[in-house]
Structures are given as C-alpha cells and as structure tokens.
Image 1 (cartoon, helix red, strand yellow):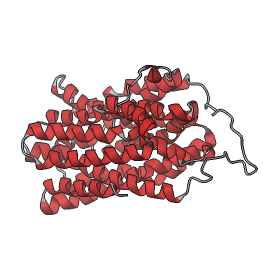
Image 2 (image 1 turned 45 degrees about the vertical axis):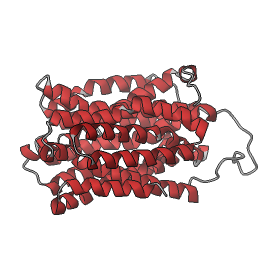
Image 3 (image 1 turned 30 degrees about the vertical axis):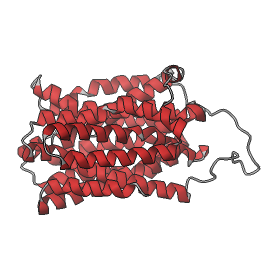
Image 4 (image 1 turned 180 degrees about the vertical axis):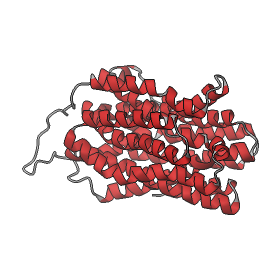
Length: 389
C-alpha cells in the first residue's frame, strides 16, 4: 500500500477551504438531531409511527423541490452569495426549533435547516472544485466531506452530552448551535469572491477538450440512480434507528445517539483518506469497492446478536460508506462541465433529498405493519441493489 504523505493535505489548506469545511460541519449538525430525538418527541407530542414518518419526510421533500433551482442559483448569482443565504436559513431554523410549541413548528424549523443544506451544497462544492487543480480535487473534497460528516456526528452526540450531562431540554440543544452558526456566517463574509479555475484551451464551441459537454448524460443518470438507492437505505435507517435501539433493544437515548453520531464521526478520518486513495485507485473502482464492504458491514450489524457486534459493525458501515464520499464528489465534478458545476452538484444531492422524503414513509409503513426490525432488513436489500448499478 502506498505511503500517505500528510504534506499532500497540508499543502492545499487555505482560508477558503477552512471556512468551507467549518461551515459544512455546521450545515450537517442538524441533519440527524430531530430523528435522534424521536423517542422524546413521540412521548411529548403523543405521536405514532406515521406522524414521525411525516416529520422525517417533509423537510427532505422541501429539499427536493428546491434542489435544482439551488444549483442554478449558485451558477447564476455566485457561490459566496448563496452560501451566505444558506447560513441565514440555518440561523432562522435554529431559532424556530428552539421555541417550538407543536409538531408543525418543529417541521417548519427542520425544513429551514434542511433547506440550508440544499442551498449550501452546490455552491460550496462548486467553490472547492474551482479552487484546486484536478490532481488535488479529491483530497480537497475529502477534507470538505470530513467537515460534513463531523457535523453529522456531533449533532446526535451533542444530544447525549447536553441532555445527558448538562440537563438541557431538547429545544435548548437547537439554541446552543445558534452562536456557532453566527460565527460561521461572519467567516463566510470574509471569504474572497468566487474562485476562477485556471484558464484552459477552448474549442470553437466554447468547450474544454476532454470535458463533458452537458451535465445531462447517460453516465450522470446512472450515477443519480446509484445515489438514489444509497439515499433510500440511509434515510430508512435514520428515521427509525433511535426508536429501534431504545424501544426494541433497551438502549438509552444517549447511547443510541452516541453510536449513531460515532458512525458519522468516522468520516473525520475516512473522508480525507478516501480522497487520497481515490486519486490512486480511480474514483469509480474505489466507490464500488467501499459500497460493497459497507453493505456487508451494515447487514452484519443488524443480523448478529449483541450490542458489541452491533456497535462494531455499524461503525464499520459508517467508515466504509464515508471512504467513498470524496470519490463520489470527484465523479460528479468530472461529469459536470465547469459552467454547470453548481447544477451538477445539485443533481448529485437531489436523489438523497427525494429518498429522504420517500424513505421515512416507506419505513413507517413497514414498522407499522411488521415491526421496526424489518425496516433495517429492507434497508440492507436496498444497499445491496446499489452495488451492481
């Protein structure tokens, strides 16, 4: 195995990349907080599985509706402006969640927080891909991805810490994150204007040799289907993960949130590491290899008995899933011409938004009909189907 040179990572660290990584962390902090709180919300608001499924489904539905416009806005108005707009949405959602009085207010708050990610991803990924030459792109995207996975981790883990050790109420958890969001907004304001890629020779039709001419292609469509399958399995898991461990396995909410958060925490190491090896092995081959391994690990987590096996293999699922993050992002950049880079990343994240709206309803139907455990068996089958695609 080739030796990893840390200088290859440190040499690409700039203020702009640091701000993108930091704000990416904040963007994803809220992604899994509400689903981790489902055991508490179910009791406080007297909700059933279908009502919980709606709370999980409506915010991604809002994402789906605005995903394509978000990418087009990033290409039209500039990446920095759209990132600032996304941070304002996040601040608003945090405040609304902190003063929630009923499930509808919570849905509105979480929808704002999800729309933050919708308007954040295309401009931030486009910004980073324009900052670096292709040979450094996977490594830079790996570092950006590490920030996002760290956010997905510390969101649920903050529930365990703030509610378990500092006696916070769940509303106060949302308010706690408002100040870091303001700091992130200030940092973005100090970022330079949109970076411009180094000029390359163009052909008569204004395309760059070797670059795809349109973001709509057969390869991109298959890539979207692949991401849709992965998004389906992940969203079904997220919707009922805490409920399964708390109600069926007797875990505490703190421990369930800790394990779910730790699976995303793997990305701090996995995402940059995946970017390094994606450059060496090839994005497509590296993505296929890791998705195969993470599917097996996911299945073993739910099929083998005992909390130790579950924790070990679920963390393994998170690690190998996140190893492919940078390679998937780099593939998106390759499949998108420069002038449509924002739209390309909007298409990349669109399947996750669609399945985020559909999967919780499907999972709620399965849970209400056959119980919670079959939800994860169905998720395993969905993950397995994504591999040959």
